Amino acid sequence: MSNGRDYPLAPSWRAQIAEMGLEPADILRIAGLPEDLLSRPDVRVSGSDFFNLWNAAESLCPGIELAIEVVQRTTAETFSPPSFAALCSPNLAVALDRLSTYKQLCAPVRLELESTMSGGLKATLRWVNSTQMPPPSLTTMELAFLLRIARMGTRKHIMAAEVSLPELPDNLPPYEEYFGTAIGTSTLGSIEFGREALMIPFLTSNSEMWNTFEPNMRRRLATLKSTASTAERLRAVLLESLPSGRANIADVSQRLGVSARTLQRRLRAEDSNFNGVLASVREQLARHYLASTELSCNEIAFLLGYEEPNSFFRAFQGWTGESPERHRQAQVH
Image (cartoon, rainbow, N blue to C red):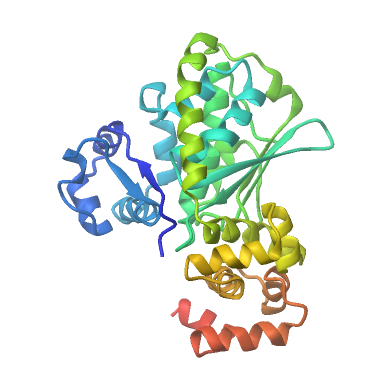
C-alpha cells in the first residue's frame, strides 16, 4: 500500500540524467512509469515510484558510482525549494535545521538532528515510504548531498566527522574520499558534522530569498501533515520505537498524542488495526535486515522488539512460510 503522498520530479531531472548519457524514456520504461510522464505539468510520483526511478537509473549505470555522480552534478539551479532555502541559510547548522523541517516536501524522507557531546550535529535519514526500503545508493546520495550543500555554501572543502550507511558500497574508496572519513554501518544512514563546520558562514546566505520561500513551504507542510493517515503516522512511530522495545500500544499512542482507545478507533475507520500495522512494519524490516545486512537472526529479533528470538522465528514463518535463515539464503542465490 502506498502512503498516499507524492513528490515533485523537478524539471531539471531530465537535464541531469541527459548529462550522464541516460535516456529518460529508458528509465521510465524500466521503472514501469508512463513514457509521457515528463511531458506533463507539475510531475509528481509516489514514494514507491521515487525509489523505482532511482533503481532504474542505477541499473543503466553499471560501473558508475551513481550517488557521487549525481551529487557532483548538482548545482543551485537544480535544487528543490527546500534545498535552495537551505543554501540561503547563514550557516550549516541553520541549513540542516531547515532541511529537517522541509525535506519531506521533495522526497520520501525525514531528516532527524541530534546534538553530539562535542558540540557537533548528527543528521539521520528516516524514510517515510511505507511499501519498500530505499535503494542503498539513494541513502548514500542523500547524505552526500548534505555535504554538498555545506561545501557549496561555505566554498570550503568541508569533511564529514562521521558517516554510517545501512549497506556499504561495493567500491568503498571513492565514497570515503568524498566524505573525507571512514564509513561505518548502522541501521539508518547518518552523517555527523563537527562544531567548527556548523558555524562557518555561508557565502550564499540570503535572508530575502528565505523569506520568499518559507511561507509557501510552511503551507505545503501543513497540508502534508493534515493528509497523513493514522496508519501512516503509526508506521513512522513504530519504525523509531521498535529497537527501543517501546512499541506497545500504550507507549505508541502516547507518542501520537492520543489515547489507546482513540488510536484503535481511528485505525478501524481506516480498515486497519494496531497489531496488523505492527506486524507489517516488522515484516518489512525483517526482510530488509535479512537481505541487506549481516545481522544475526537474534540481533534482528531484538531490533524488531521481540523479547525472545523464537517469537520472531514463529512470526516470520507465518509471514513467509519459511525460516529467516532460509529466506536469507534464497536472497543470495
